[in-house]
Amino acid sequence: MSLYNQRDLNDDLNREYLPSYHSSRFQNSNHPNQAVQENFIQLTLQHEKELTSDPGIVIQNLRYGGTDDRQVVDIFHLKTTPPTGSPLFVYIHGGYWQMLEKIHSCSIVGPLLRRNHRVAIMDYNICPQVTLEELISEFKSFLAWIFDYAEKTQTSEIHFAGHSAGAHLLAILLNVPHITTPERRLKVKRLFFICGVYDLRELWPLTEVNPNNILGLNATNSRALSPMLWNYPEVSVWQAGDTHLYVLTAQHESVTFIEQSRSFSECLNKAGFSVTFKMFDNYDHFDIIEETAKDDSNISIYLQHALL
Image (tube, rainbow, N blue to C red; front, side):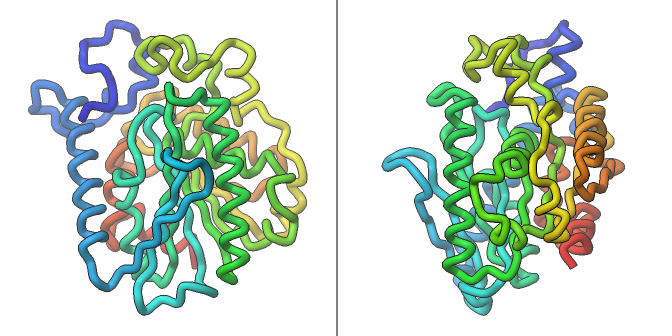
């Protein structure tokens, strides 16, 4: 499986938005960018297989919308962890809104389970089966659903993380106060935006990222769907709940991706959120997620400390 077109790119701007071209790994391969992607797929599928074959782990497959599509979520917890009353960690996968699924999203699960969290891995319909605007509407339905689920299961606190396009989707939580009540939002403690894309204005015309405009974007809605440009309402509710935001990026990302994370962090800070920006040395767009499967990796240790 290849995440991006493998032909040589002459367009520097297209390269800026293709993370696999900026990794320092697999440089002895004929196609290092392809090797990075294939390694990501292989490792994440391996992590999913390890979880699903572990008799000590309970997995619930639940539907938050639709009937026979990808609007589903897997809830993981150890048999020794109560299914109610424990903290809940929600993860949103990337893939430029057009690739990957929840089976490629389980790397982060194991260490969290061992710290007595329940972990929700959501899936969603991808483009071009839906437009990005339609996907966002479905994501809002998921947010309403996950807060209902958290209340029904007496969740002690909720944390969210999104990677790449998933970080873009996660930003919607901060911009739609009507999705849930202020009382429910007080349960949200930590949000992790990992190697995300937050400004779509430059991205949408790029043929390597948005071939045949499968995202359904234009000059107008690309601006409206860019978290960097939003006016965030009701920040005081997040302040009251002691919610902290982490905008994380990797050393081996493109200049554009790093600057988008830095600028998004500054945007959130100016809006009044409590924000930490961090660049991780020696990681790229892919192994920053692969390494979450290891309890002793730099990214896992950072997440563990943030969740204390």
